[in-house]
Length: 328
Image (cartoon, rainbow, N blue to C red; front, side, top):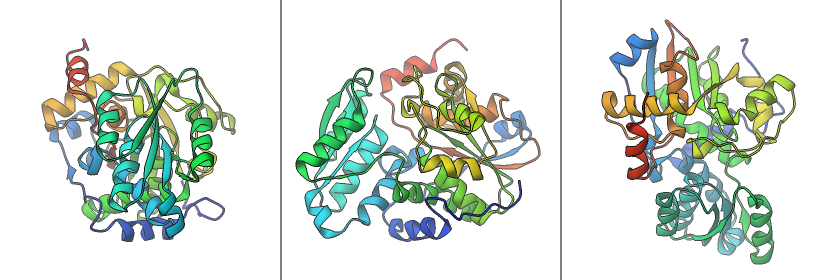
């Protein structure tokens, strides 16, 4: 892929660099781990950026804090509202608390109890809904109107996208230039921000997205050239149960991402087990998407230096134990 430009996209390199400055000293500079076993299995040199060790246990803190930190005083006083299955919820709640703002988060009633409890624990008011029969965006918009709050969506927002991309700025600072970058994919906030950062810092890099096989709306969208909407996917990767890629994130993905591949739930469970046994890491299913594509042979990149975003580690212990002992 030739070096792409950023003109006309929702964010550019300057936005990601500015986000990094806002997050300096606030977000954790997460470690990068390696595994000889993973390298031998894939024939590549893999660098795992451990955002499961980020504040709130996921990369989402980066985008949420960046977006809230940019709000003017009047909007801060009125507060923010968000909708999320869990990690963005916690990120908004903690960021709002750090910035002295009230927050409301609309969450599906079947979201992991751990994530609902954590969101409330950070100080947010939680409004529950049925993800299969109700529209979270409509609920969020209604509450925003009624209370005068600012709606901060989980991925389709320039400041959120830019904040997520700071993980790759760090990764390249930590390990040097990459040949390829592999990123998990739901609505595209992380992938789009990371793609901008990667092409800025490592010209010529190949960027790939990975989504659940049951929820391949972005893969379908890339093939058709338009945003495809699907039913709520049934997958253990609860953080990637999105129905449609974002209007802002999709053009970035179209221009900067080489391809999107998929992995199934069995492959995700095996990758969770690999992280636990070989790397001593607790990683939630969504956080395993990118690594699974390499470890399961879905995306062969032999001989390359490959960055992998391990996006999160928030999962109830009971569910974690259940998935670890699943038959391979």
